Length: 223
Image (cartoon, rainbow, N blue to C red; front, side, top):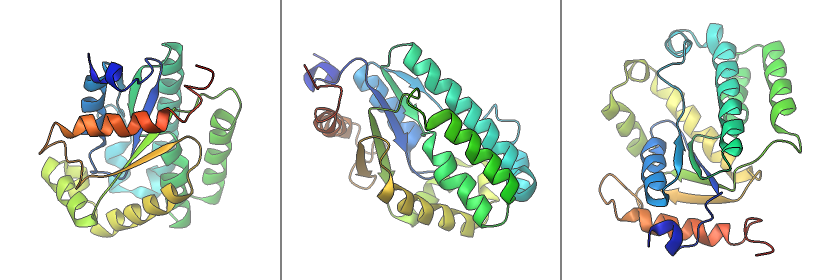
């Protein structure tokens, strides 16, 4: 019996992993998908034509970057539900508008017109009865220094060259955002307690916690 069957995770479930840059979303996405025998949906970083340009000039490229991510994530969300679920998704569509676009607007690296255009498009795509929200969002959190060390260890040049103030700002905004997030059920995990790089067996406890929350959701109602 695999972990999905053991803890009665529905085969149609869609689980999204959220959290700031470097917190371990990709690691958990793969481990959780393997444990549940689910497909994965990863953020398209390497194929993003704006990412390098964005890190060198936030003001010029922030709108382009956010539009690209929004379009790609919406297409992924549509594909996931066309498959009938059974996915673990790396990063949620909600973070784009709730954190990144909002931060650039408030910091002056995205114009008011661009921000309103972006938010209007997001609302038209996501804030409708036709959009399928995930069944569970797993939010990864942990000490700021711990997360910055992870960013440095993975060695992406565009991230290495980014000022530490940017990561502090992002970290703070994530903590504020998750406290008011209500688009789907949330499981919060501290990476110091569930470090899959040091303890692969921690994935079973994560599956168990996810199951407990999903059993209170609409997936089980009427069953």
